[in-house]
Image (cartoon, rainbow, N blue to C red; front, side, top):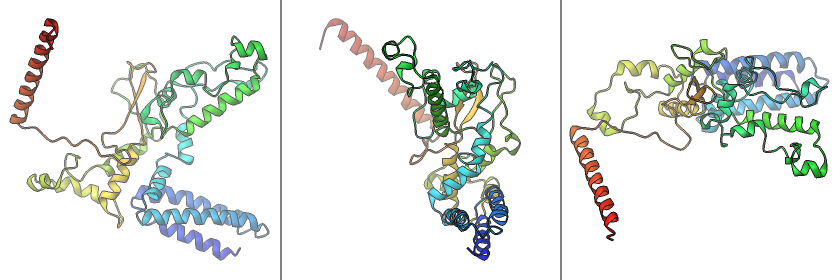
Length: 345
């Protein structure tokens, strides 16, 4: 494979990264592409005697190029993949965010399953990781786990329990297999979990000792919410008839619209960022929860294929109608209770 073909492919990659809708996307994606360029110059251009390696790396680069082109052309799935890569929903940045939750420095390590093997310790679940695995807001398309599944994975056979009937009939279960099953289940569930980009702390810290992810200074969550917010002053999307009657504050919407530098429709881009917010859980301390933490989503989050509930401001007539309706319902319930006591149909 000629070196000119590799350079041409990378130049096309740089050209597409400069057309991404936001500066953060251009910076992050270009950072990874620069690493690809350095790798190409070191391991491909200088190693022309390994044509299979050159072809494999070039096919991967062209695949990334096609994805960036589709994202710049307005393909929803491709743009979602770029956003997930840039904000740690997948890829290397996700592993960087995930490693802060895999250990629990405040508690001792779990005991070894095989006494003579140090690596036979089962996975440890910190309060933050337990909260994410058992929360619906931090799971991809799967159900949240139960607390019992963390200590006894459903993939672990009943024979692993020494007091079970199968263990008594067939003998003890292999400890090495138990270690492998526990870690395989742990790794698989981590792939189905979203991790927060930053931690939200209250004014006064409580019992939950949250550890920082290292991305708090970037304020990624605040940036995504700003890009996903509506150009209206209160951030709530309004119907066309209401927008005609209520004057808009253009001073607030101008900085938001200036954030995007793309030919794609602004509404399309805002909705993609609102869908991204549905994949970014917010982890906050909560003393009432069993783990000391709780998860939530941004009020601007938009799940796939759904719209947020749009509630307008009620007038005095609306409030009076609601009060009369509630009073009528209470009278009907009392009347039904009296008839039931008397045994009337």
